[in-house]
Image (cartoon, rainbow, N blue to C red; front, side, top):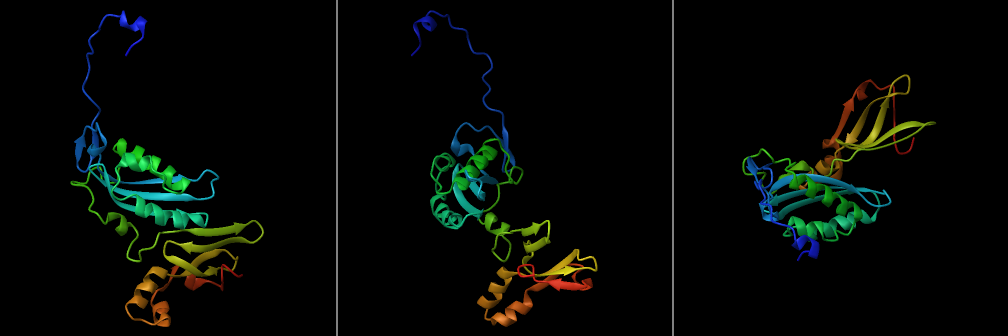
Length: 229
């Protein structure tokens, strides 16, 4: 349907009609014209409207269908429940369905938008991996302890910094030098600890096996509990 003015126009033939530019997908170059043409393993990050928390969303998409989802949240208390619901919602949906589905938390919805854009433009982690990444790749991202890698630190001008959680695990003690500067820390890997307990070790035995130190902790003049001192 056209306006009366446009109906009077003559036809000018369309010259270039070569379709979309190819994007790298799972070891090949693909011209994506519809959702089933999209495959890839990618991450997206988003925040909620009041900026109270954030979501890292990882999807493994095969021919437009979400086959694997990893949802990691940090922020308000309701986010962990949102992650649980999103984990049940996402698998089996097409990318377009997921983009237009309420994933419970604004941060997850925002992450979904970011991830959709990345996949639509061929910016995926599996762009040059022949056949893409197998289902289970997102789980491997968590490592053997099956825990998100979280860094939590706190500081004030008056009292300085406190490392609370690092990639290695839950920080139990900070090591300070003669200037009261942090030179290392002691940590407990909680994921590994639970693995040992599940395998039959007592909590005390498991705790002893998963303690470790980072930096020049052994050279510390004094140590402090970062949560209480």
